[in-house]
Length: 517
Ligand code: HEM
Image (cartoon, rainbow, N blue to C red; front, side, top):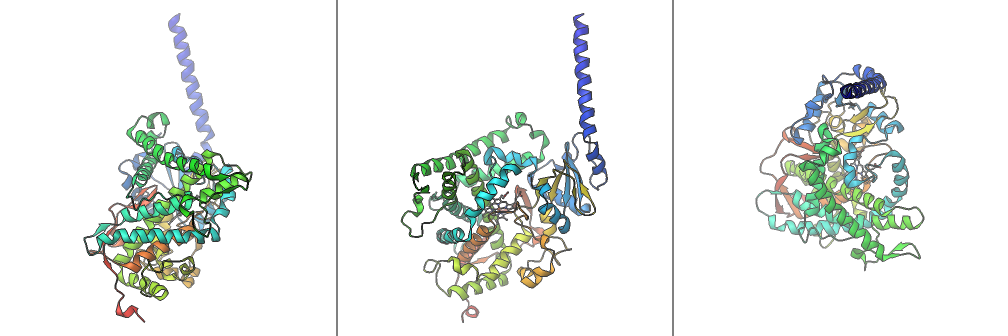
């Protein structure tokens, strides 16, 4: 009798399980039918195409690019039960970028939430709409202009630190630049001087790097998706250690700031680094705390999430692009000369210490701006972006079904012959206004596009110009052997990175005869 009751329970459980599986698949029948109309690699039961993404992190980006080179846009693939469409046609991308149906980030971004919570970058659309509107004014032109002083001062510290490399061997430039961009973002986002450059403290940079690696690895390894498995792996342990440190830093600053907060007029006492300065520069965190006091509340946790988001969105991105831009100028000395000529026209032979770069100088660096844009074209730090499709979305000849996700193939479009003749040639003049006018506007989207684009676009361009300008006024950058762009190995750890460190030599700059009027 006991056996038959057990048997009965077992049969019922199996039956319920089967009914659940059938209902689950019936509900998704529409999506399966839609998926069948698109080209893509053969998907295995349960795993989908996850088998394709096994292997090292550095191979994943190349595998995605290979798929895009094999199939026409839009292409279909499955990660377990998740259906993805990769879109890499500028017109189709335009529709996706601009549609309210694809404003929601893909669920894979949730793996960044232990670190960034629901700050702007990872926020669900409902929260993102409210916070984006509140935060947008803190990036206004006047505030950005007040930051240029910081961009310049920190870049000057960096070029001084690089002095030891003058006339030496090739060295890894990322070490210098990442500490400089970290000092810059800490001062402008939090209003504190962490002195990463002077004290050579790279723990933040190392922790953020490892945290990114872990997030990216987890995204493509579907067996690491459930928390219960991930938390028991070495990756889970690494993430906990890194995030604990990263959070402690931000929490510390918030608590200290709160003690200087003046509750009567709702203003923050000037932050420690800017105390005796006349222009009353405010950091991003100060501005957010003032907003909170005006009744638009950010909890302490939300403040930390938004500051962590800015710290990470604004540090590694600009550091990486600066390194790529310097590499391109080392590879192509004639382009470096043109940039220097432009700087010479503004500053003559004055040293950056005597006449630092000011905000009103930045708009005169037109050629440098084109160099940065061409760098962003060939090396977009966000090589792919992923959004959820919350309702059927017609993208021209196809309809992406509700419940699927869309991968925007920015890297592929940036290097497509369709939009860029001789795409692997480094040619900043592609960004002359008359050339831009001839091109599809969505063929160049390094900062994303549409309502959920990069909030720090202007900040980033100003910071990069100040840093690169300061380096090139002081040094000539040289490479012993040029690596053709087609042979440069790239990987994605969420952001696009070079597989090998970027190295070059420096010499002190003595203006060339041809450059002096
Ligand atoms: C070269 C530098 C940079 C590049 C190429 C870049 C690129 C991007 C891209 C592609 C996105 C969209 C990500 C996605 O949809 O998944 C994004 C978002 C964002 N970026 Fe940047 N970024 C840069 C620098 C900065 C800086 C300096 C800041 C702030 C100081 C910043 C703040 C943000 C924020 C807050 C978001 C989220 C926007 C939202 O969802 O509303 N970025 N960035």
